[in-house]
Image 1 (tube, rainbow, N blue to C red):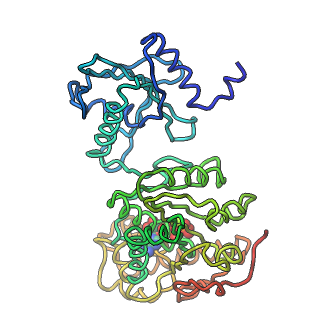
Image 2: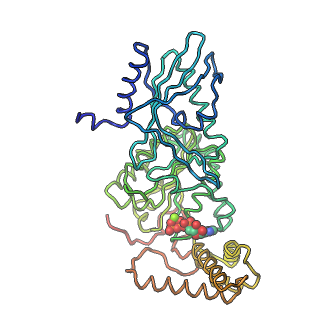
Image 3: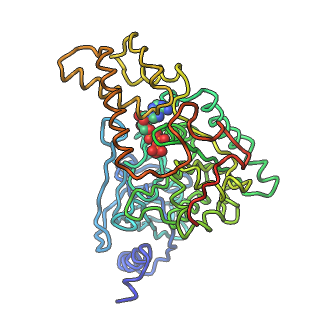
Length: 447
Ligand SMILES: Nc1ncnc2c1ncn2[C@@H]1O[C@H](COP(=O)(O)OP(=O)(O)OP(=O)(O)O)[C@@H](O)[C@H]1O
Ligand SMILES: [Mg+2]
């Protein structure tokens, strides 16, 4: 009894499945396999019709739900757009197939690892003579589940799909064009040519980019836009979130690296706020990963996109050790009038008027998040006063109140040196992009 309590999730499913197989199939031999989670998905079950021919001589003939005291069949809907889409289903099922040599059945069971973990574990018991047909059927399930639903295929570790959505268009990110281009072409060059070069050097093809910048400059947005581009190229996106109850623990990184290594596709791995992992006891292991000792070896290539607000955390451990991060890109606040105007126009939307341009110089040195709030607040002020348009005075009022609020907040919060000021330029004490290790102020954090 107590040993059962300590069994892994899949082991419990396997114990149940073996007993069920004996009951249904008696002596028929089976092979126990990890299975594709999409076979349990209601979408696959709806879309693949009985009598569907599989490669070889097998036909799929139908599916039946099986009672299982280990799993309650349950479905999850996601909202990638306006209409809800069935995301995933777990449960126990018997799939039946026809074959000239005789009909056969596959027993399948899937479940969530834990209540708070959205990852699914699924296993199947398959007659060894029909492995081909089953693998073929799994591929079909994967295909129909992915194809038309426009499901977000981000693999999220430590959170739900709501944590990160790859729905940002590249054009929505307002940053210096050369910076965006640099990041984009780095990703493309790596997957196109870089992977082979790493392999020729006998290195695991694992490239590491770090986005550094103050809060609200668009790092998360940029990650989401990169993810969207990656998905379009059929790359797998893995996102590690520290936002759930488990926080920033190394086991998430470990889990992510396993997924990355076994993905079978090129992977974009996103780890936000990587500084948090570097502050903890596990930092030596993270550094091993960055150094290549524990790098995932995905033959199709893996690109790590990490973000941080705290340049001083990356100081000793990363910046001064070549190769830990291949590139460090500074994502700065708004640097010039041109970008400030683009940002304001974007967030004023249909309320934009040419005379709003008068505030543009005040927005230089501020962040995208600031401009978005200014625009939102101004639009709400105008709506509240039943004005149909946002006039310049309202816009100025909005800037004033937001600036005050931030200044008051600064007084309330204990000041903490984080190595960047609020002035213009990138305001960050860092060059736009740096491979050289010596630029970061040596205000090293705790060890
Ligand atoms: N460069 C930008 N272009 C367009 N919008 C931006 C930009 N930067 C910020 N914004 C707006 O501000 C919001 C917050 O930005 P985001 O979350 O990407 O900042 P961040 O750099 O990740 O901040 P943090 O370091 O606090 O995580 C965005 O959702 C977007 O609405
Ligand atoms: Mg962010």
